[in-house]
Image 1 (cartoon, rainbow, N blue to C red):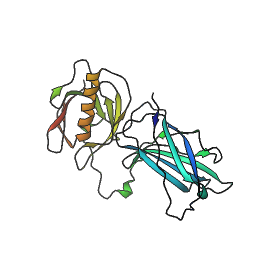
Image 2 (image 1 turned 45 degrees about the vertical axis):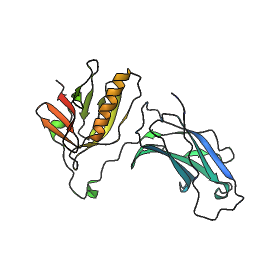
Image 3 (image 1 turned 180 degrees about the vertical axis):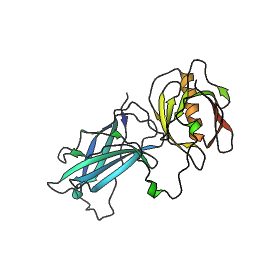
Image 4 (image 1 turned 30 degrees about the horizontal axis):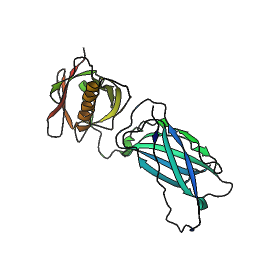
Length: 255
């Protein structure tokens, strides 16, 4: 897998910085084990913290542009006068999509100020935490049982039948985690019910190499999921529709 280089911009402090202060450049790689693509709006945030307290010293973020895969190269410049002599420091990496953290390292990666380059930060997949019912302003909207824990076969996308050599699947679990196979890659996302009646969060998936027409169809299906704002469920037939009620994808219950 190709190495993607992300240069994290310098974050300056709202403090008086001596003109002669030099930068300390922390550099290295952010890696994750999952073989998956990142959402198109993914961003990388690198934060320098002190240890053992974990208080933020400096940080910056950069867009990954939807093209990044593991490993991701980073560079973080920090003014030397904010580094205390003899202090211990660590780096925290987060890959986010909107307000949701997709990957992060649970413990700061220890860094050596004297040798700030060559750091490797391994981040872990970070699923969204369950909602605290006490924090709900309004009661959650329940999905119909007939829609959940069912394997659906996609028969059409944008009014066109799926390619005969492909099998596109979709399901929503009782915890509202959704996913399946897009015809080439396994994918996963999260369903939400309420306003709109049905919508999906950022989509992540594997990165398999398939025929171009298959990948084009898969991209169209992922786009349909991203535009979904409701559904029409009649018996064993399901339609995903946009905000205007126009069908985006047709599905049937798998026998």
